[in-house]
Every structure is written in structure tokens, then in C-alpha cells.
Length: 533
Image 1: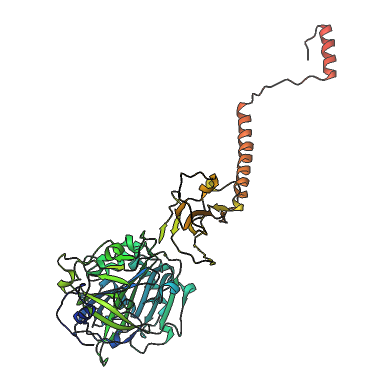
Image 2: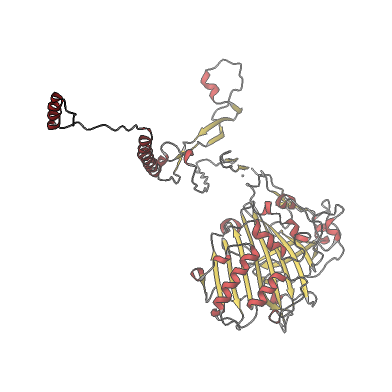
């Protein structure tokens, strides 16, 4: 592809389509096979623009999904021509905390990811960088490491402190040595699985404590560049969130005569159209991240934003503003894709407002309206409203996924094992009328005719209720509280009753009654005037 016009002429909407196409210019990138977005992880085929000791690049790829959701993928790449095994005393762009770990444990490749949610391939297609739910870690050590298990154990403990994660729970019970699936992604001849360790923690909870140290590894942190969009409040209220870090050696030039170390930090997030509270397919940087872009990272040699416009070649599906004449093409996952490119290093990209807030607005008016209001525990229930047009003699099925949860013991019904009822669904419809409706309300007619108020002459309005839904929730064993109550009452009654009886009873000493012989003797002695016995 050649640069057809190097002038940054704006794209005027009022011009004809032919004139608009002539004003567009193509970025000088070569179409290549890749398993990622432009400037992908297959970097041995992509040389750096200028040979430098270290350099930093950042990019954001935005792809509208067919489901109405939107996929945002951040990538930050730091390349450094150095030797970690000899020890490094000065760091400029590469994070020192990670470089010291790599030097100490002789790490050749390190791949770690923290993912919250599950990637829905049927609705979203293939992800740029797949990752399992939870935490995943796999490391290739240098062939000079003698005690790989010991280095692996110490490395997991150190990484646990760096990323504030539960990686210290990785031990021999959840560590494996794959022989085929996790080959080295970088260069080198280390392919002996004895130097490979892999572990996954599927129950790892990803939160702000994991994202904050991950952002601190960036040269500009979250103060400038694309990282300013990474607001935790927005990222973690999404359908899918995955942050990863990849360290490996790559080629420095086309002939691969020398290698450099590459640190690639990625952040992938899918924003759901309905849970975001929007009733229409309209996205912008501010709606997704609550922030806009004002500048590139000053330490970045390249800072770009790519918007996938492959399915929108003539702008008939959605409108992208502000428009950019710069386009780029790449083969991603076996498919040729076209991207609108925003170069943040060019001050003209931000316009007069000195702020970039890209907006994607779908042109076609949708009929598939969906209003979804999530519930809040013990405050409000779920609410889902959909406006659909059903063809005759058809069956429409609406399904919802839910998670079972335990309630407080005071919130259970008297018969919890029977289940809990969910209220009836409401279906409001305009049904075509067989005959013309009479809209004259002053005319005398039967009362039952007012049960179906008229919307228009050719249809009438009606409301249908479904039967309640019975849902079985997990219930505790209520016999245990009964047994505890009985045992407690018994212990209290026996213990307290005995103690109370001892404290309140009055004791008296009584003389025992004399025997018959003694009484007869006392009678005789009394008659004789002798003292009694």
C-alpha cells in the first residue's frame, strides 16, 4: 500500500463518496498474516522503526461486535536490547521490579494473565489473545537453571507480591509440564519441557488490587497516554475483563541477526450494551471509560487507536466521528480487516478541543429495544423489557442465566424446600383485528367490549401474563437449628435448674425419733423420778 495523500485533509461529510475516498490515505503498513491486531505478537516479522536501545509503543483496538457489544483491546510494548543475566543497574522504560525478578530467576519467557468472566465465542467471535478464567502462569526458564522446581516456587511467591494475587498457592499439586501446547513464543532453542512450568488458578478473583500494580509497570503509568482510560470502576463493570503480561525474546531486524527482549502488556475488555444502561447501540470513549484522550505517552515512539471498520466500508451501518483519512489493513485470524487509525502523536488528531472522544453511532433505527435493570441485593429485583416483532405461527424463547445464592436464614419461607416463586412475565401486544374497530366511545355498547382498548382501527391492545416460575434455591438443613435449640434448652434447664434449687432451698436439722425400748425406759425412769436417758 502506498501513501496516496500525505496532507491531513479532513473528511467532509457533505462531499460525494468518490471525493471522500480520494481524501483518505492508507497507512504504510504491510498486509501480513497474524494472530492478533495490527502490530501483533508475531513481532519477529515486524522490525522496529529505528534501531534503539529501548523503546515503548502503545495502541488501542476497538471492534464493534455483532451482538451490539464492543471489544476494546489495549497493548503496551516495551523493547530493550540488553542482557538480563549479567545484571542491570539502570532502568529507563523497562520496569525495574520485573527486570530484577527476570535476572534473579533466569527467566527466558514469562506469561501471566488475570481474567474475570468467560469469553463467549458464539456471540463475540475469536478473541485477540485467549486466556482462561482466573489466573494463568507459565514460565520457560533458561537452560542454565539447575533447580527448576525451586526457582518456580520462589518465582510464584515473588509474583504474588508484585501483582497482589494468590499465586503463592501454586505448588506441585496444580503445576504441570506440558509438552505440546505451550511451546516458546519467542526465539531460542530451549524446548525441553523440563524448563517449563504451567499452572492455573480458576477461582482467582480479579479486582483493583491486581490492576493497580499492572498499570505501574507502564513507563507513563496511568498519568498519560492510553492508560488514562483504564478506570477500575468501568473496567470491572464489564462482561469480560482480562489483563496479561508477556515477556520473551524477539528479533531486532528482518534477518534476525540480533535479538531484543520484549515486554508486552495487554488489557482486553468487552462492554455489554444492555448492562451499561443504554437503550441504543451508541458507543464513545467517554461512555466506555468515563474519560477521553488528551495526549499520547511522552515516552512512546508510537501511540495509535485502531477502529475496526471492515463491516462498514461505505459507512452504511454506523457513523464514526471524528473521521480520519488514515486507514490500515491487516490479516487478523485469517480474515482481512480494515481499520481507521488515529495517531495520538499528531496534535491535529485532537482537534481544536484538545480532546479525542471517538463516537460510534449506528445509522439504522432498531426495532430489537432492550431495557435491562440489574437487581440489587435486598433492594430491588431484576427488570428486563424487550420490544420485538414476532412473525405469525412462530415460537420465541427468552432465557436468562442466574447464579444460585444462599439467603439469610430469616429470609427463607416456611417451606423453603418447595422452592421460590418468580412473578409472572407480562406480554403486551398489538394484535391485528379481523374486522374494523369502532372507535366511537359515545356509542352505547356492551361493557365487555371495553376490555380491549383500541390502539388504532386495524389492531387492538392486549396484555398476557405467564404463570409464575418455581425456582429451587439451595437451602440449609433446618433440622440442625432445631437440634441445637433442643440441646441448648436441655442443658440450660438441667444446669440452671439444679443451681437455682441449691441456691434457694432452706436446710433444717431434725432429731431422729427414739426407739421403743428407749421410750419405755424413759417412762419407767420418769415414774421413779430418775433423769431421762
